[in-house]
Length: 350
Image (cartoon, rainbow, N blue to C red; front, side, top):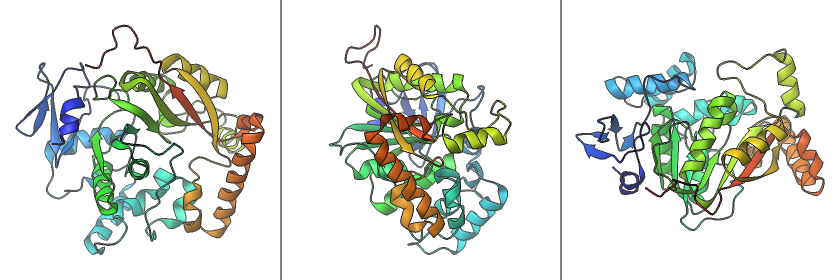
């Protein structure tokens, strides 16, 4: 297993150091976590799961079924799409876009990408809105097939991506290797990060915590604070309850509380207050308008009518830099938080 991971990973139950033993990572309390093809599976059983795929990942990691070597059954898509992925795996050329990316792109990138299912000609890697890195450690929470992890690696960060889907993490490994982007991957839960305190200079997450209950999101943010270095930064995307498209979605479901994987909408005041309390000083910026997940870097591969939506979103984002109150009507925002330079009492590097 990777040397950096061996040095920085801890048991997600009790934060004790781990040892590699017979294909498993084991803590002094004898909690055991399998390592599959170099990927640690650090999920907890016996807890409520934020996603059903976590249960599938635990089951498949234990069984390692020979008829599902890529762990397709742990992907967050329906049976029809899983069957299409398997068919594409059996027939695709080595140089083609990874079959998991082909059929997960709408789930990970947004509904505007639905016309591209099974028809991608290139892997959609977004532009990370951070300065170039110079080897700083970078955690991507909810990385799925690795698009943001790859984007961060290309900008010079030392990347670790986590996701509860074993199949998605295996795809991320393949896609990163294919694109020559060095990144490490771990199957893990954002609420129980398997890393020692102060392991990361930067923590990033996109289109993930919006699917958590607000209690689970707060737990995950507390974990972000724990693993951030003193003075480290987090950049986390969240939905704005007052965005025009956000209001439309809430109206469609009758403003009832969200269920399952549905998006939880936050007000900007609620977001800033929560992030400042749990991580540190926080600023807001616009990610986009007219929906969640629109990326300018992908505009050229979208159908023409959707390119116009992306370009309009980018124009409004540019204007919002000059007119800050426009942030209040964005659908998607970034929270830029900074961990205090002084470690909290009892907070050590382990």
